[in-house]
Image (cartoon, rainbow, N blue to C red; front, side, top):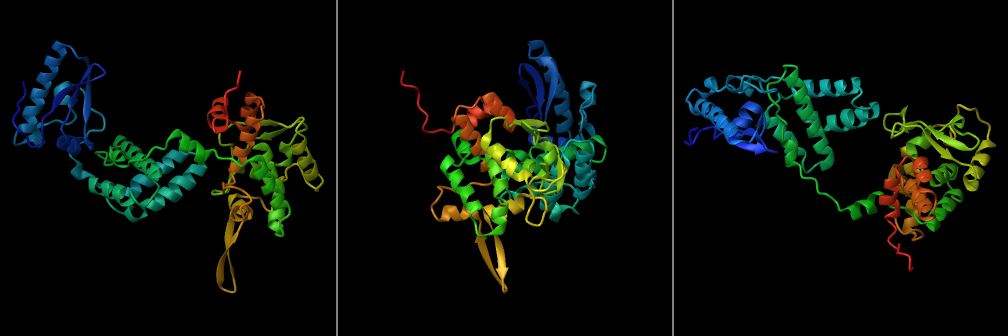
Length: 416
């Protein structure tokens, strides 16, 4: 059997995973030769007495090499010397890496975009803007374990942890790609996501935060306030806000909606406009959705009023006072409010919904996306066919049950 003498590298052990044997390498050896805190190598054999004896003999040979004073020369990290096969993504020693972070990162995100692994909007907003800005101070540095850990722990208390975890995961994938290309010898970001602890919210709390809705009374107060506002921009957008409340469509979908999408008995939602990238692309679920309007008097009345304005089929249905396309920022400025300045003095002008909350006319402030949640909640609680509702808004019936019917805290069982 292998030596139990204390080694500079530690001891290699035989363990099992789902009934199959594997080698478990000590931390020091794992970091140096495999770029991981803990490296395992599956042996592909079930844990039987005969196979375990064979594995112990392998470990004995490996342990003798790493215990030797010339371990760096004798130990074969590819394991080909012991198993007759090579282990992927293994290095001889990490000291020869000279790749800069910017070379790794930008090649990787361009590859992701070019191969369609991420959409243009995700590339521009998440990878090119957010993640690249976070990495800006480190881009000219050479990749190393020290740099990887510094990036992770520098940002740990500065940025949103779930997104930081996504970025570190992307850097890990980038290293794996570079290793496959022969540009890197090890993955410096392996296992660093374990250091980013993301607190998990309870299902109830998540529902409260992500699927909150206005009551029917609050919805009508909001619409009345937009229509009766003394601000032209707020009155001008009232039709768009009502359309959101009456269809539950997403903001990007209403921005991209054209007259050619409105048919006699239905509306076609097949595009979405990204306010961040200014690109019109497929809907969030990448599907064409039909919203049936037959018998929906209030919505049809709104559409008929809008039709009275001169328009072409290729025109956007909703445009600003100056005839421009709406986006999230324009909606937010009249919904929440905006910063303005007059005579060199900066001040904040609250939007319609913010004012209603301040004045106590509605119970809480919710984002514009709550128009969607309000529509779904009101329809679900009023007995509409859930399959029709799910198809109309691009959700599943399960989502309707779990997040919209489920948030009715006053619901009780029938007394029968």
